Image (cartoon, rainbow, N blue to C red; front, side, top):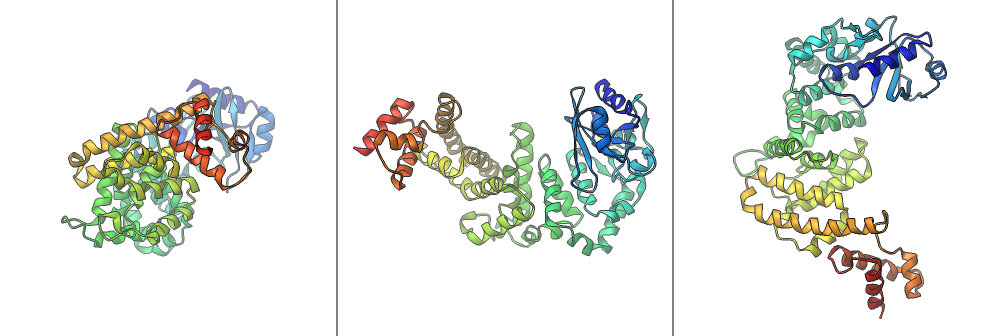
Length: 428
């Protein structure tokens, strides 16, 4: 905390008042160390503040220009104070747990009881002011995201006000741009995907941002439930594994669980077609998800069932070369989650364990290449292959490189010298 207060004091040496606000204070109250601190500064000219403190750049994109930089070893982002006072600024913030400020002397400004709500694990609209929701209805999703991630209850009046708002303003929800939905959905499913989607369903939000998922409530899974129930169960298992197994954050892993059954009519995904893939790709594109993540999501959905059958190192190597190492690794993790959700984990445990072992051998060999070549994914480049074999550019060079990748992944080639010898044999 001392370093953070020193940053405030350094800024205040320029003549402007500054406060720690928003997510920074909420995290500190929850015992979480923020990687970057958020400040409110009593100045309408962030450029002058940056010049006065001698660091930082102003990002003028968006409705609130931000000064971003590092001061006294602390990364920060600073916004101009909204309103005529810090109390006015806090009143503009959507949730009471975010409407807290800390002064440079360590004093706390908490006009809406945010610290008490944090201690009581309660989510509340700031000042019980429903106009904050009216100003930006997507704040409802943000509220549910916090409730899910921090396992907090929603205050009864906030719940009543939000449900009443949704009853009257459904059209406003439909008008929210897809990329804004996507940004909040992605944040919501990263830590507590099952809890977050269940809360969205409880507030009848699914038809607004993922109608096809909501429609799965009407599709039986053949086991006395619906496919929607199955999706929720998959997300529940994923949520448990995110905690227990400490899976490195991977958006594709959770998005595959959320979207895997979109457009399907049975639990068995063998009936999936390209049209289904297009639905998923369209959602993710409109949510502004990066192209590489979209490719990984589709790879997981289209390949995870294959791991229910024994896979040789050669077959796994082909998967790695087709999709990527991370995608196949996550797909195998996903296959285990799906098997648990489907009640088949014991039936497939030995096969999944063996496939996991074989995949690790393939990945180890590719990692060895990177270690021996200081980061390159191959022992030789296309230019080097042409020079070695006295070849001209063409399709054959690509075929040789692909064959060499397979030889590396399956353990037939383990050095630059072995790669050259293998290439010579292929051209003989």
